[in-house]
Image (cartoon, rainbow, N blue to C red; front, side, top):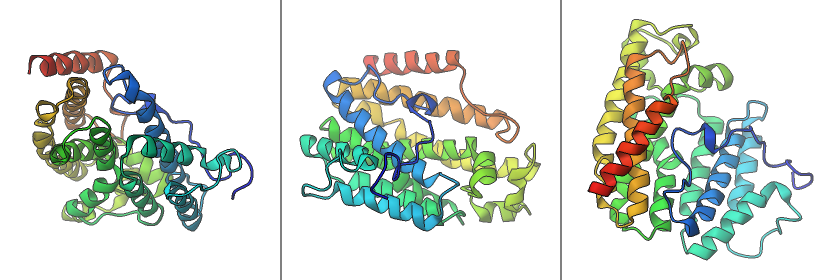
Length: 287
């Protein structure tokens, strides 16, 4: 796999514009944005490998292990010789420059390796364990990058995990159809007399609506903790960014409570996103 360009990575074409949240926006300090961009590119690359339907599970795991190896101390393989690992080498350089632990990246890799082999989640606790590795490391990296106190991790984890569950709800039909992957707790589906096949219908059955609402209830509980994050941050810029993201998460919960993710793509309009940005920034400034 160490030959031609793209032999390790499998780019999906997705980018920062496809996310529910701003990635390294102008709200963050200019000097830190390049590091955010490197981290996002790394996370995007390994996520694309895990989500590639054309790869066998063992191939996905092997490729992700190559990314983990490239983060370890030592000279490693020069990016010029292994183009498919260029993003991993760039990530290693960022970690060296900032002094941030590689554990956040390794946790992401752990989650995406799990995605390669695990397609069902029995209960909410099992789902949140996955989110603790697939989403929470993003917020922890940002806190570390801004020199924030690790005491802020729990509120940051809650926000990132809430965003992950929201994304699972938005994509529940596509994940099932394209990857046979279901993040809704199967015991909740069974309690409604449903199998995962309900996600293949053109619209939600009443029982599936109740399962989605239970997920939203859990997400709102996470957001109650996340609401405390902006006010606990020393960095005014990071506080503004996080306040905007918290507003976006609440707005998406509201939309998912009213709309059917099987019938259409549930996203915010440009006007709704702008409103979240303005109210989030103003709230952080006034706080």
